[in-house]
Length: 150
Image (cartoon, rainbow, N blue to C red; front, side, top):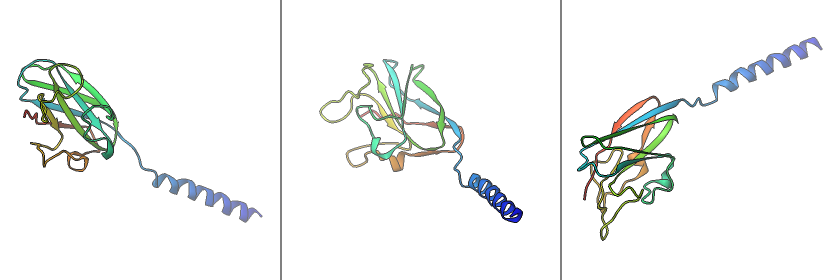
């Protein structure tokens, strides 16, 4: 009987310790996003971070994971998103000149500056995709996003 109890205890200890090895450890990271080349100091820059492909891109800025706005100083703006769990994210920025939180459009194209992580340009056939804009966070990271005026 003692051998059975001892064996069961040993089995429980083995299961307990091996279960720790299978848990994914989420690390909280910061993501600093910088943008330069803003054409003027009107309004603010809106920075939105997305963590799912179905939410990106988001013209109405309603499906973001986190969002911040920042002032413009000398054509430059920056924010830091703190305590993001490690994982994949995409960034969308808007030079929100009229501060309404939405992209101001002409007939089709935006009249305000926009930008996406990992994109230098966009167009009718080069629309942003989460898979291409995605940044994998494993530690504190800083990126630059190019502002695009059309």
